Image 1 (cartoon, protein in one colour):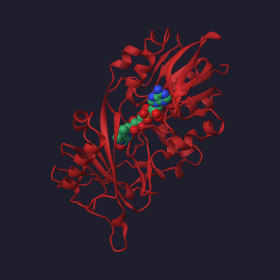
Image 2 (tube, protein in one colour):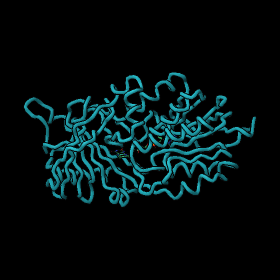
Image 3 (cartoon, protein in one colour):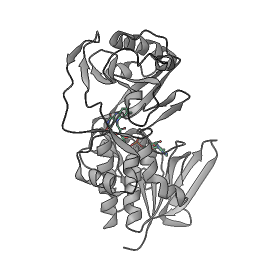
Image 4 (cartoon, rainbow, N blue to C red):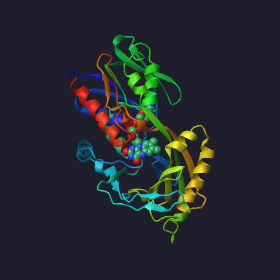
Amino acid sequence: MASQRIAIVGAGMAGITAARTLVQSGQDVTVFDKSAGTGGRMATRRTVFGGFDHGAQYFTVRDARLALALQSVPDTLSHCRPWSANAVRVLDPSGRVVEAARPGPEAHWVGVPGMSALVKHWAQPLADAGQLHLSHQVLWLQADPLKPSLWAVHGVDALARPWHQGGFDRVLLAIPAPQCAQLLQASPGRGAASGLIAPTLTVQTAPCWSLMLAFPLASQPGLNHLGPQWNAARSTHHRIAWLARESSKPGRSSIERWTVQASAEWSSEHLHDDAERVQHKLMRAFSELTGIHTVPNHAQAHLWRYAKTTQPLGQPYQWDPSTGLGTCGDWHLGQRVEDAFVSGLELGLRLCVE
Ligand SMILES: Cc1cc2nc3c(=O)[nH]c(=O)nc-3n(C[C@H](O)[C@H](O)[C@H](O)COP(=O)(O)OP(=O)(O)OC[C@H]3O[C@@H](n4cnc5c(N)ncnc54)[C@H](O)[C@@H]3O)c2cc1C
């Protein structure tokens, strides 16, 4: 197949996996992301007290193709490592362990030094080639006025300055389902008429409030850490679904840091609350679960509006050869990093043989 110009919107696991696959088959790929960094929901928030994985906490490696990518892409294993939080407990609402740690057969992998490191590493060749445009939000797609059979991509940068790039044979959307439907609906002509919108609208997602807490005084000589002996737990508390000691992950600084994830139900109920109010409520629940009553030196709440897929599409990608538009992302298959990887890979492979 002759080399095609392909625009990919979204530099998370799905978009970068699709991009890598297409570049390997000789395609001319340009990636746009509205954020200042790559990784999407595999995110790391840096603070003076150390980093927080405030999106995905870890990923599994069940798919043989992901295992192969980790082994075969040069230097990948220096950007991710297994985390011994395999020993995940289940807590009741008062913080009592109701299900002990069961060492599972599969490792929990994390990026090093933060979750975003893996995708950042895989995106580096695109960045080096000037083919990765960060802080570039895409607002709509349109037929290229110079050659209407091709696509032009329009958007704004971080300072709300408009930009556009044309001449693309294909455009792949690797963004969460609600944003994908919105972008297509905002695209005049072939975009808004695309048959990709209706299936995308069937996908459902849930939000998640994440809370980041740092207790630097707990790292003073003579004090190992605060609170519980375990490093990660699921919880049945109505506010909190998951909590983990960030400082227990490999390649992190030792300053005591916790990331707390609210349950999907509680996050939905508090979707429109301000971050300060949410922070206060989640900190109370955190104290109930861990017994840690020390006031943290750093506390910050972050809302992921489209955190997790609750109703996936049920197919690995969408591809419409008549318009040259495609979609990929975790929401096609599920709610995990591996789903995003498989979706991006399969769309990339499909286009390699088009
Ligand atoms: C709180 C939380 C906890 C999680 N925990 C786990 C876990 O423990 N294990 C696990 O496997 N998975 C977990 N996940 C899910 C995992 O993070 C996702 O499955 C995976 O990262 C999705 O990758 P993606 O590439 O499909 O989408 P994303 O990572 O969302 O990437 C989409 C990218 O598109 C960009 N974008 C969106 N709209 C536009 C636009 N208009 N223009 C330009 N760019 C745009 C975004 O900035 C983003 O970078 C968690 C997610 C959250 C939020």
